Image (tube, rainbow, N blue to C red; front, side, top):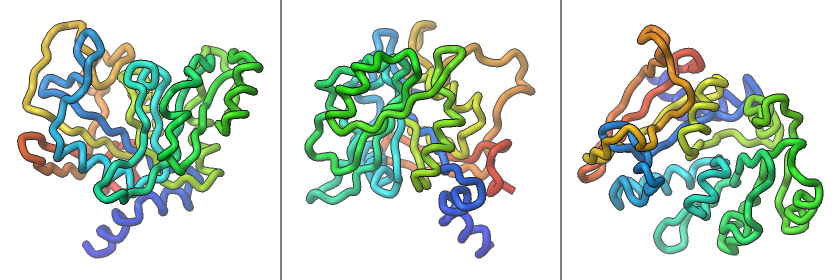
Amino acid sequence: MLFRSAKKLNEAFIKQITTGLPFVTIKAAVTLDGCIATKTGNSKWITGEVSRRHVHNVRDKTDAILVGIGTVRRDDPSLTTRLSRGRGKNPIRVVLDEKLIISPTAKVINNSDAESYLIIATTSMAPPEKREKLEALGVKIIVYDSNDGLIPIKNLMADLGKMDITSLIIEGGSEVNASALNAGIVDKVTMYYAPKIFGGKDSINFVGGSGIDLITQAMELKNLKVKHFDNDFLVEGYINKNNYLAD
């Protein structure tokens, strides 16, 4: 039991030194019916203040945070750690932007409170002049060749590992979540549930993509834990197929 606890405390370090890859956690705030946004894309705020404060404590202990360009354009997040009395370490920000359509006025580029740097992963479809302008603003650009127009997320994880990024949280939309899960890069899932129901077939689910045909194809989580934050509750667990710590 003691050995198992020590492994869990050092899970990110263990994965990075044994595989060269960061330990990846998907984080989402969801309703009881599994929605991360309404049909209009509205998502602020699903969970309560206590849950959101816990998220910032988690960010403080994480090397990097990743989102897609859809989240940047919709929410214009800073992706920083906001704790009381100015405490908190800001993670490296990573944005997936296949065509470099990010606005140069986006908070993730211009937030003066973020001591950490910004990485944008893109593809060869991105205009070279846009890349040069962003690099002039201090943004690190990583360009990938892509046959399907998407960023090869496995290759990105390998490159982030080479930058000594040990732990990474994905706070993306449904399609980014689907891409990460389908690529097999996710180790852990953390879901902050709020006692709300959106309903509607056009509400945005936690995981997008085409889905599965059979229940037997479902991804399963192990070592589940549940915590309460006022009216919200957190469910966290490890993906079976990836997690060398699960058994």
